Length: 117
Image 1: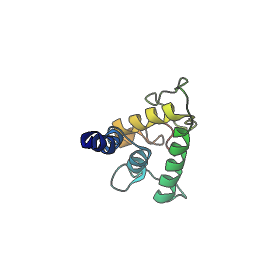
Image 2 (image 1 turned 120 degrees about the vertical axis):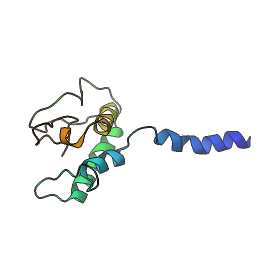
Image 3 (image 1 turned 90 degrees about the horizontal axis):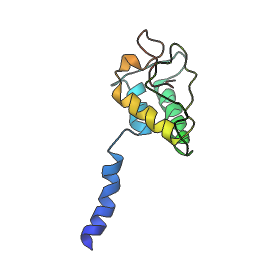
Image 4 (image 1 turned 90 degrees about the vertical axis):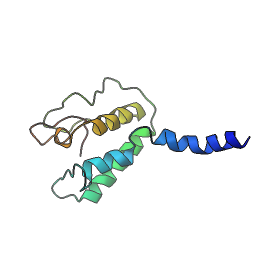
């Protein structure tokens, strides 16, 4: 009985650590110690907060990818929107796997894993 209870308490922590989260994804994008993406007129904390709100909002909506492919380069604009949980999960995985210079649509090599604010 104790083993079952212990497994039930510990399993969610291991499952949460299996992949990227909204927090780890947004930190990668905007943290000084990681990609440190910047936008004129917005602080890193504002960008991180916006990212978290957007990501967590998408996670609350069930749905399919509907043609969304974060690994496809979007060019020089940031017109992609995350509409649901599956798109948010694909986006988080993409950000987790890409080098920072590939994430900023304003760089010559960027445009992957959109949206990036």
